[in-house]
Image 1 (cartoon, rainbow, N blue to C red):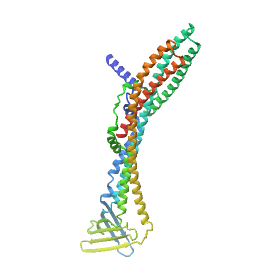
Image 2: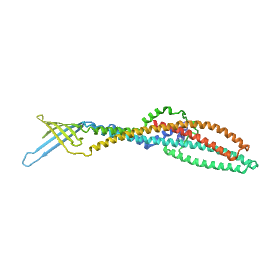
Image 3: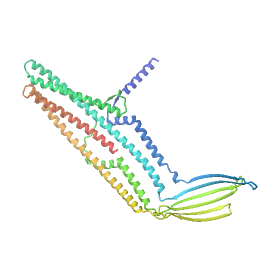
Image 4: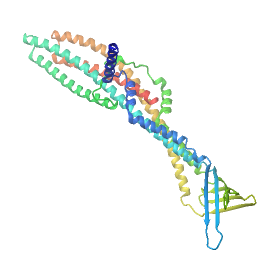
Length: 448
């Protein structure tokens, strides 16, 4: 029993530790955590998927319509026999052809739900990119602080030596003051960097929906990240194809273009009729059971889309009580000249052309975007390679400068300036590497 208690205690301790500290080893982990914790985005995505499912199965307009009715009429007149009439009616109607208008309405509903889904996906993508940017900015800030802290610690050590030499009469007052000023400036820079770091930590916790008390642990070195250094230009055509297929904006433009095409096609076929069929069977009589059946079948041709003379033609066949058969044809027309008909057709043609041009422009713009990103990526690889080679030279140069300073061969101001430039150069290299890693992740998000 005591052993089980300690096991439970150990388990609870581990759970508390896990809840209080989160190690985010890469941006993908941070994005996955943020998406898992974002209740609003999850509900939006769930709702958009349900809307798509609803619109997909909204096929009721294509199915036959069934209806039934019951009627009972009793009439009492003084000094005359009572009259009683009862009837039950069943009917079915089916749309046979309407030139695709019902399907267009169905397409519009699916189109609207699909656009809603794409908007949600765009929101998720922007959310992921925000996490990505904040995550790498925070890592960069931590590394900048580390470099500045090392520089400050080294400068303080050298300040102690200068103070000893000054007290021994081996160094000038100006040398001492130069080191003191340098230490103060570095301390001020560290204070500012730490303030920015705390702000970024708060931003990241907010994005990930974490409590302020939660401790986030991040990688401390660029070496903990794997990032390929192969140029992407040789695969530019593949990346253009992938981003064109994955672009949410292009999917929206394509859906809009297809909708405009269908609408324009249907508007050009306004000479075709809407055809529907209706069948009715009814039973009537003065008392139950009703034994007087009536049958009717009506075929309706509606030319309501004609711009100047819309009309409707009905063909009705009836059979009453299995004895009386009748056949009726009727036509009705309305004179309604439409002065805007030809202008409206030009507007529809113009809308279709605009939709096509916008789609083509968006595809080209998307391809240009990925081209610019890949060019930036490959230029960064070359730039980082040059920075590393130059850093090795500067490391050798700084060693020589340290020797020259110790032996009084260069001025204190020149020595501190060179050390500061070397520190800034290290920051530039780290910054470029973080930018490259972030850019590679961004490209992956855009093409997937």
